[in-house]
Length: 327
Image 1 (cartoon, rainbow, N blue to C red):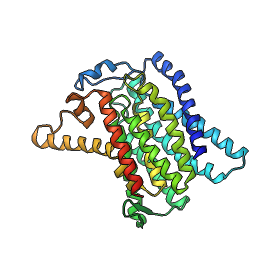
Image 2 (image 1 turned 30 degrees about the vertical axis):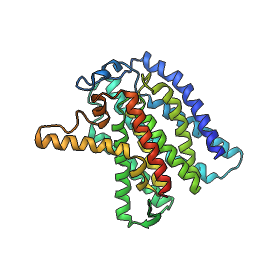
Image 3 (image 1 turned 45 degrees about the horizontal axis):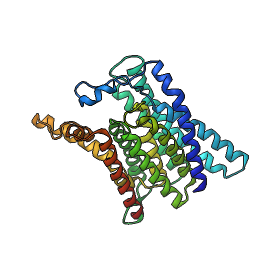
Image 4 (image 1 turned 180 degrees about the vertical axis):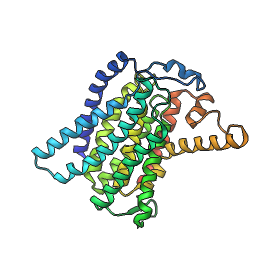
């Protein structure tokens, strides 16, 4: 636990320094947020706020991972841990790169549509399949999946597990992406989720997962200093897809993807609210919510951004405590 705290603190420092360098650069390059005119009117003032801030997280992960690899090599610690950390890092950065391409097309090349949804999905699918095959075919972790509250593992047939794992990865990244819409919301909620998974990994002794979690905790907290309302930087798809990748990667490595139903309930609700809104509107021409995802509904009901972030974060914290009782 002490080492993980040191890693988190070091990552926090790297993240803050990276933010102080990258945010002015994004501003100088005029890579700013483009707000929807049909969204909450209070968001129009965010127009021009530096975005693609997820680059800060990518830089932090890369630097922290390099230092960890050097540390493990110099002190001759378990080489397997440092080696097994690489796929988790590549999964996270891979999703971040796809988000970066999408953001770059919108912000730098002024293509408002960004990366075509088909290309985006193909990229995410390739990374998801590669990671799932790595876990099952190379690491030989098996297909055991932990059932919360029942507190038992069940072994799924490989032909069920692989599609299931891919669904978890794609669903999680999309859910976190939808949660990113209020200053500090996605960062705060995902930091709590990652912290919960990190604590669980320490409890059951999976060091590589606790290390990637510690890196991301520090990276997110450093980024959050500049992302809280009023945000000085917005993570963009670069950050939200990266964070989604981290969460599902950790959960699958721990053989606990179903724990996400508890600790990641807020992103799940965000996703379900969009699905309900679209389906109901197509059928009736009316809306269930004033606006989806649901955090915008609460904004239009009179909640300010800080209230939305606080309430959603507290709920996630309580759910994380419940999750600890479920394992």
